Length: 358
Ligand SMILES: O=C(O)CCC(=O)C(=O)O
Ligand SMILES: [Fe+2]
Image (cartoon, rainbow, N blue to C red):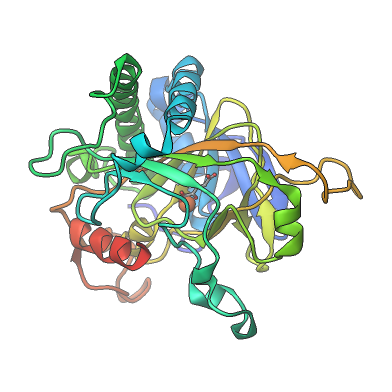
């Protein structure tokens, strides 16, 4: 077995030549072409896999292009999502989110509290009193006994179309999760299919997000106001599709927030806390947040007018609920690094985290 480099400093020549999307304050987020992983030779796959793992071990974030989910599908999901959020509030409330165990349904503005109390200076009071400026629709694995998705299909034909569009997209993202896990396996010197049986159930969560248009003055008058508070994601990886609006920021190793600008036809992929734990903290789950769009022109007057609506689609991938997550082979040992965590069932871990959030 080749020697593992726990710091993520893989020899350059093993990696695919990659374009850098973001490079600021020691945060480097590459754009990785996933086509050669999906369709290439074993050597191509290996190169892509090394690049993917290198990114997860350094910034915890990467952009994937040629990822296999057609742009036409993504834009259809965005328009279905926008039509859903444009429904009367009463209809959306009738589909409301109920429990962390179910984690399905509509979440109105202020219901999810991502910012933690530590995120603001003590003098500023409790960050939990600053609600995120967003509403979401959470869709889980279809067909789980006792945990039905909250579809609008009984409302009208558009609601039926919404269900069909989301179910099909859910499956495409599930397939992409499996492929990214295969890349991680190869990049960590494990057999390509090592994680397949860990993720085959598709216990994932499709979250549609809508950040309503907001007066620019809201951010000016309250410097702590954000669209989504700083957090890390909980699961294995997140597939994040952004519109062109901007506002996503990632914490750099220097502690600053760096804009992760939208790059057309890519999906942002970031590692979640459970993958970091699973990798014995060799992979990074990096904190991020959503704020108002970055200024286009320096010195631009941002006190008048509104920032437009922003839509994004986050597909939170998880290991199967019943899988015991113990450190990945090769990530711990006497000569490498100590084992940091006991095993935990993926489902238990996620319910614990969701319970603290809602
Ligand atoms: O809307 C975004 O771009 C990010 C959302 C996010 O990070 C989340 O929901 O976990
Ligand atoms: Fe997130």
